[in-house]
Image (cartoon, rainbow, N blue to C red; front, side, top):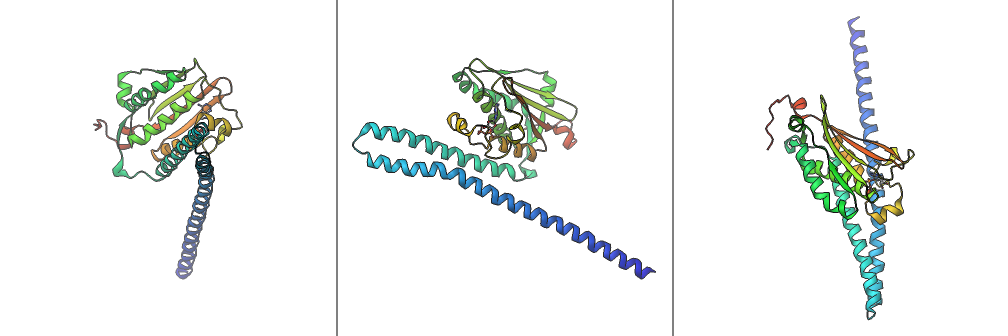
Length: 273
Ligand code: ADP
């Protein structure tokens, strides 16, 4: 009967509504759990330098009159406060990367130009570490095509992170190769080093926030353990992704994949700013 049909329809609709609602609820709980997790991580990471700064300042006060001891403590104070600065900068960057990109804040990005700027900015750091940075040239028409839509400054941060990691994990005399390649729908940027590499058991976890393969060593060579997590969220926000290949003793290659600008917008002759 028509009545029965209507009733069945209503029941179906109710079920659908409940399913959607339950999904939302599950999603909300997951987001809340992630938020709690993040705050717990952050407070744990911040505690160490904050406690150290407190103790060191007291030690400086107590050692007043003994210049050599004071200067030793002051050096450590400087190191810990720098670490605190890096941590807060990275935490802010991560939360920015995790928020969705507003369409009006996106602009066409010439990836080759961003890459060039970042490679130049890292030349000094590389030569201080005895590492050579080699940016492979590509065909002019590929360079012209290598465009995506997003925030250039955020993409610059991702590339800077990969370069700094590659340099920091290379040994003296090492070479870091940087390349850009255009495929049909995507554009790929690769950063390859001949450094220590990453063991397979660590590889799937390096994009997690605060994950470090060797925490004690990371403290020495710098780094907050947030760089790759920021990179991954930024790439996702741009409709892209980040991947890694690595073999201990051979090196690592990180690949950034971007959707091509003309593919996404349907605009063939995009005129970047
Ligand atoms: P960090 O601030 O410690 O560099 P990242 O999130 O950038 O944090 O990287 C996470 C971990 O992945 C690092 O602590 C390091 O152990 C490992 N890692 C990242 N890049 C490389 C690389 N190019 N070679 C070897 N290990 C790397």
